[in-house]
Length: 339
Ligand code: B12
Ligand code: SF4
Ligand code: SF4
Image (cartoon, rainbow, N blue to C red; front, side, top):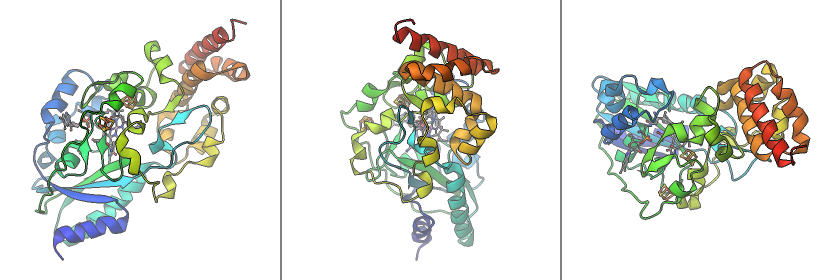
C-alpha cells in the first residue's frame, strides 16, 4: 500500500471524515490575509499579526516540509438545543481542540513510522487552514469564508499535519457557491463585508468570544439571542442539506447546560461556572465575559421574570457584568412600558 493510502486509512481509523493532500507552498490567498491584517479586521486578536511569513507558508513552520495532510471532522450535533438563547454548535459540549489533538497525535505516530517529520495543528497553529484545505480539494472556501465540504456541509473542523513526506497532491474541488449570497444576506451584523472577507470586529462570534471588554452598543441588539458564537452564515448554507449528526458523542448537546434558562446563568459564581463548563470551549472566556453575553441576550429577549436576576447582576463587583446588566435592565424595563 502506498504511503498516501496508508495515511488516508489511518485518518479514517482515528475518526476523521475526510483526508486530502496539498503540496507545501505559499498559501494561495496570502496576499488577502496580509491586507486583512493591514485593514485591522482581526481586531484585538494580536496573535494573528505575529510572524505572517510563517502563517502564509508551511515551509517556514517546518523545515523540509513537502506536503500538507488536510483533515476534516464532522461535528454537527443537531438542529436545536436550549430555550431562549443559542450557542454556536461547535461549543455544545467538549472542546474540539483536545479531542482532535489526540487524533492528530496518533496520525503523527503513524507517519513517523513512514519516515516523516510532522507538525500538526487544529485551529491554534500559525497556519491559514482554509487555504490549504481549498488547495487540497477538501471542499472550497465559501463566500462566508467558511470551508464547505460537498458531503458534510459547513459543520467541520479543519486540522492538518505539515510533513516532510512527499505525497501526491489532490486536485482542488473548485468553487461551488455560484450566484448564492445567502450567508451575506443573513449575517446579523453585516460582517461579511465582501465575498470571502469577514471583518472580525463586526462578527458576533468575535464579539461574544474573542472580544474581552464591553460589547459596543451598536452591535448589542443585532446579537439577538446569541449567547456564545454565531452559526447564522453556516445555518443558511444550502450545502448543509446532506449534513449528518456527528458520530462523536462528545460534540452532542450537554444536557446540564441546555436545561438552564439565560437568567439561571446569572446565578453562577466562579466555581459553578467552571464546573458547568468543564472541558467546554466556553470555559476559556471565563465567567465575566459569559455573563456579559447573558446580559446582552436578556436585554434583547428578557421579560418581567428576568428582572430580579438582572438586578442582582447589576450589583456584581465585576464592572463588565454590572454595566451590561444595567443596559439590559433599561431595555427590558422600556419594553415593559417603563414600570
Ligand atoms: C481568527 C479566526 C476566527 C475569527 C475570524 C474569522 C475569519 N473569517 O477570518 C472569528 C473569531 C470571527 C472566527 C469565527 C468563526 N470561526 Co474561526 N478561526 C479563526 C482562525 C484561527 C484563523 C482564520 C484566519 O486566518 N482568518 C484570516 C482570514 C483572511 O482568513 P480566512 O477567513 O480563513 O480566509 C481564507 C479563505 O477565505 C481564503 N480566501 C480569501 N480570499 C479569497 C478569495 C477567493 C476568491 C477564495 C476562493 C478564497 C479566498 O483565503 C483566506 C486566507 O487563507 C481559524 C483557524 C486557522 N488557523 O485557520 C479558525 C477557523 C476558521 N474557525 C472556525 C470556526 C468553526 C468558526 C466559527 C464557525 C465559530 C462560530 N460558530 O462561532 C465562526 C465562523 C465565522 C466566519 N464566517 O468565518 C473553523 C472553520 C472550519 C470551516 N469548516 O471553515 C476554523 C478553521 C478552526 C478549525 N480548525 O476548525 N474565527
Ligand atoms: S458568524 Fe455570524 S456574525 Fe460572523 S460572519 Fe457569520 S453570520 Fe456574520
Ligand atoms: S450560503 Fe451560499 S454563498 Fe454562502 S457559503 Fe453557502 S453556498 Fe456559498
